[in-house]
Length: 343
Image (cartoon, rainbow, N blue to C red; front, side, top):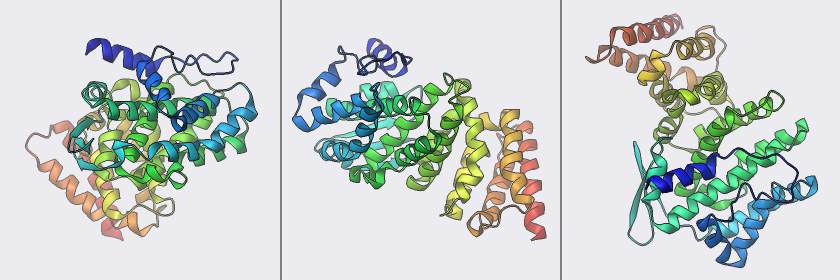
């Protein structure tokens, strides 16, 4: 198990070598058994593997051809995915209906999930690894794309891939596809240079907008909590707070009950986020202050405030809530309650 986890994390976390080359051999080690097996299955899957490699090609035309061709190849390959059968969203562990009657469970904690993957049937494991391989090449592809208009168009397509790939609308594939995107973004975030940071800030914003609209609140909370739990991911957690309100309001706005669940689940019931002063300041500046400052007119968001206040009031009254957390929650409560009373 230890050997697998080291090998698996090494496979996903190896820093990209940006030297000019005609393939992504550094991204897909030839010794990686599951990738070899995947390539050997049939012509359709070999075709997808070729396209995924070409996303990393040094030739711009070849990369862009691969990007345009990718959705069709994904549709062909994903049709036989066991992940596509079903996914029961049972917080905090997700249960996939696997091959036949076999059920498999998956944790979305960034530190625990590689161990959970190791316990899955081989077919499920290979499907999940393939989703990561695609995202890894997409990140490399985006890294090499520097024209502003072009890169924004590509990012929009990447974050709405389900519009072109039918099987990304299936719950199991969709959830693992989104998880792979955030997990890989978390790995690469600390490695970004100042010249490419803006494009990935935009990518994180669009990925957030897509995630909160496509998935149930329980999954979104479980996924995004990683950015408030582990110190190495807090920089990206800050950016999520920055875009949380705007991303929720952007047409179509998320429903009021979902805004309530996401806000309280991430920022009012998460002890780590409540104990971290930079997070507290960010929540006040980018979420609470725009609301109480009458900068938000979206009915779905404003109608969630009474529910948010009720949840905060309940959390303050819970016996095991520390005095420090009570003070933080009370500050949130006072600001929002004063606004609601004056409306």
